[in-house]
Length: 371
Image 1: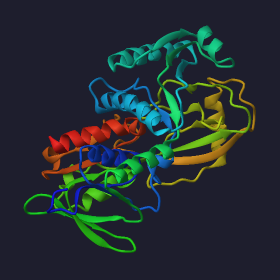
Image 2: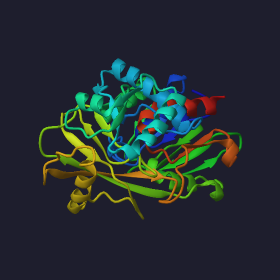
Image 3: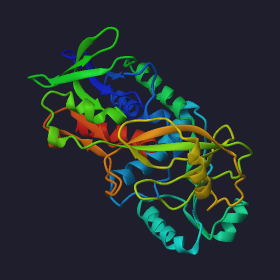
């Protein structure tokens, strides 16, 4: 460790992406401290998602989402194998529920090939229904690399790797602010039961929903370079009954999100969601009456959904950088060229496919900071 600093690097946020950044830096020989406001790791965006491993089909050519999703997914499966974390590489069917949707599948096919997604197959409706009886599909795409995994166990493995490399994951320690030091590096102020300050050469902010707030607490961070925050709420309903399909089932994406989809989770339960509702602030309540709209949507691809079998499960909030009628932007990894601070990487808008991309995001952050 550099003698002049308490830590080589400090990462703000112990969700999947923050921990992956800490892991990538620790693998380069740095001693890292990850600061987490909550009492446990992964309590924000990382605890309220679909736990899906995305293939990388949808994202625009040349975008960080396209690059880091595919790279991250490949690295993720290897990491899960090495660390004994449970997963199912069950595959995903993207289905056209009417002939009108087939051109949208063709566009997704072209994008998947442009993104170097392996093993994609075009299926007729009959072929898809042979794989998943009961499915309404006029045509489908098969993404065999998609899956589901135990995301919290994954985060525990990342935490263990950081600690094994001499670093620390410090819980119940909210970030209060930071100032750049005259000769380089930062002083970081942390709150909690024992408020403290520490110094570091590199600083990474990856706190999910509070990314804008954290950036605003870095003295001198230009306010015009902090993107506006939007909160995209999504709720999930669980099926009271036997799971109907083994693979992930996705209709074509909706504007701004991938839409309400189906998964058979690691426990064998069927879960549907998320939908998308913009909210003024994070809100995890679920209105049971939303089950009616869910059922109507699900019956497009599963006509035999029984009545009154959808049970409210949980809700999540995504840190979006766009409003309801705006184009969906890329991941934002803001370095010195954006804000003027050497050694600072500020992350914004790390929503889906952030979980799948997390290891590759960590590598990208480490590459840029250590270039």
